[in-house]
Length: 177
Image 1: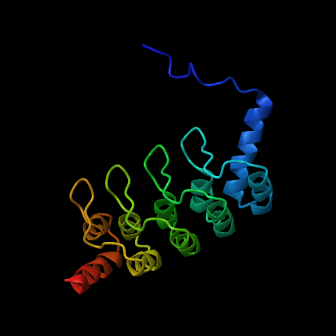
Image 2 (image 1 turned 90 degrees about the horizontal axis):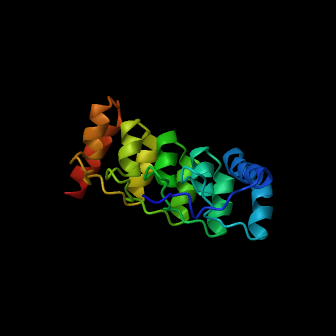
Image 3 (image 1 turned 180 degrees about the vertical axis):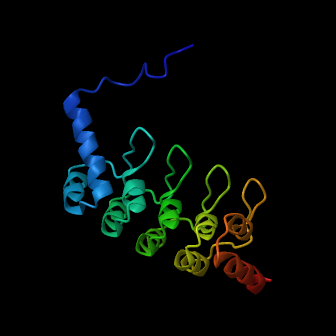
C-alpha cells in the first residue's frame, strides 16, 4: 500500500503558522488583511486540512464582507468541504441572512447538494430558519426536492421538530402545483 502523504511537501513551522493566520483572517472577518494577501496572489480557493475553503470559513462564521471579497477574488461559491458541505449550506445552518444573500448574489447554486442529497433549504428548514427558508425559496430553491433518503425539506423539518418551516415548505410546494 502506498503512503498517501508521499507526494506532500514537508512544511516548516513558519509556513504552517502563516497558513493558520490566513485561515484565521477568513474566520474573523479580517477582510483588509485577507484582501492584501489575495492581491499578492493568494489563491481564493485555498483550503485547509478539513477541506474548508476560505469562503466556507468566512461564510460559516457570518462574515458577509469577507465572503463578498472572496467571491470578487474568484472563490468558488459551491466548493464543498471534505464533508460535502457548501458555504451556502453553512450559512443556512447558522441562519445568517446577510451571508446567504451575498452567496446567492455571488452565484451560489441554490439547490447544490451534499453527498447525502441535502440542500441549503433542507438545512434551513430543519433548524427553523424562516428568514433563510424564505430567501432560498425566493431564489428558486425546489421545495419538493428530496435527499438521498427520500426526505424533503418538509419531512426533515418535521422530524427535527421545527415549529414554522414545515408549513412554509408545504405551502411552497402547493403553490408550485
